[in-house]
Image 1 (cartoon, rainbow over the protein chains, first blue to last red):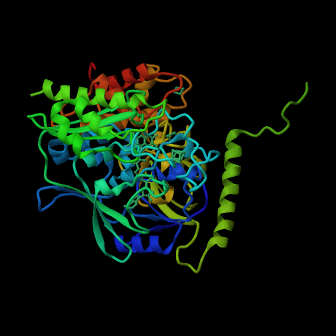
Image 2 (spheres, each protein chain N blue to C red):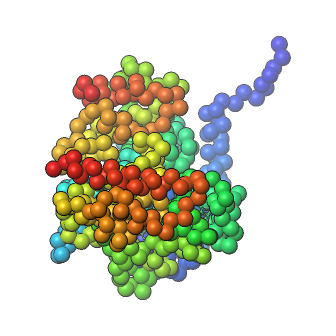
Length: 318
Length: 211
Ligand SMILES: Cc1cc2nc3c(=O)[nH]c(=O)nc-3n(C[C@H](O)[C@H](O)[C@H](O)COP(=O)(O)OP(=O)(O)OC[C@H]3O[C@@H](n4cnc5c(N)ncnc54)[C@H](O)[C@@H]3O)c2cc1C
Ligand code: SF4
Ligand code: FES
Ligand code: FES
């Protein structure tokens, strides 16, 4: 790990200012992704700003009847929260499908959204990677791509976003709240938060330099049945090959977001509209522009089958 | 008889001496990195309690909680397996919650209360979970065991606190101690020796249930 200076932030504004004044600074929340990457010298910040002590660890009901989740709320606390379990079950389910008990005790709402890809070539500093080193090329293309993306990818990068929580947030129409270094706040719909790679895969989100996430808000509950189904190589403690986050109403309509297939949680309006017609119709819309490799073509069939299983589950239960 | 090893150095001596070198290096590095007293230095002061005892340390900012415990406080019960959050050997309790001590910075734990395996029990005065691991052969080489035991104790507390898991049936009902729950919740602790089924038996016995 490279040496760095360390500060405990005094306020949100001060943290954002400090981050914008120091070009090599990073916020640190739970540290479970950042420190992992710093040990490998994939992330090399020269200054860390600890944003844990700023009171951003509360979950509150909003005036619109939704929920405001502080950026530093731990994944365990979010999954366990009474209102989340009752009204946003999809979110609880997605959270507990991710990582391990120990990691969820540290991992935060903001950190989880901002965790970086698990592309094995991104992790191997001996390989070229446009995300890690812009312009160096992509070793994954033409390499081992079983885990990588099938849609939303580009000629420059075919990595996926690995978060389970983000898939639930996408289906729930979450909004990311931030504070910029000049003290202004903004709200970014989750659909615009993660960027597709295009020719700049190192730019992963809508966040500007120094912009800090303060909370994630959820609109009022959508009702319906909440199901998160994750398909992976072992039953626990593994990233998704494919995951489906769905909210399905009694009449079969609803929404669906997919994890493990794209550089961001994948949701398509036309697929939501086709959901009542069944998994085949919805999947055709979800995967309409897919560009799989020979190694990961199976993910397209897996999305359809997993979605079929999810729909089946809603019929089994009253 | 030929002397094979003229300089017998125990592992513990080696650790103590390398920790001393590290302390020296960090003091030297510190003086170098200090910028006009505005906290812009590469080491920081931190105090926390470990197993009930207060410690004040000046540490290189890079020091993980795991390395602080092992190399600076010589509490070597907590193990380093992968150093990347993947194995659970470094599991300790911080303010009553289990975490991977390898993926957190020591300087981020000012004022915290930490419990390591040494704090749960020692030979002659074992924690019931330690007794159960011995009774059920919940280990072979023992390397993962301190992490397994810390996690096991935490898992029962987490079920008691009604924290849901991936296998919890109804999110609005109370979580229960079943074999499936124990297995899922223990998945962050890897055992290369494969003592898993005996570990589940040990935990089940302590939970007092017939899972
Ligand atoms: C072994 C292992 C298995 C895992 N398995 C899964 C899995 O199955 N599913 C899954 O979804 N995840 C998994 N994870 C990833 C885990 O969920 C993330 O590491 C965690 O959510 C990151 O949160 P954090 O608070 O620790 O973030 P940090 O590591 O502290 O930060 C991550 C990034 O967010 C930035 N950041 C933090 N807070 C803010 C803020 N307020 N504003 C702006 N930027 C901020 C940091 O600068 C950094 O770039 C796994 C991790 C490990 C190590
Ligand atoms: S797929 Fe993306 S992250 Fe993976 S090597 Fe290529 S550029 Fe890097
Ligand atoms: S050493 Fe921390 S999880 Fe492996
Ligand atoms: S007992 Fe050997 S690794 Fe678990």
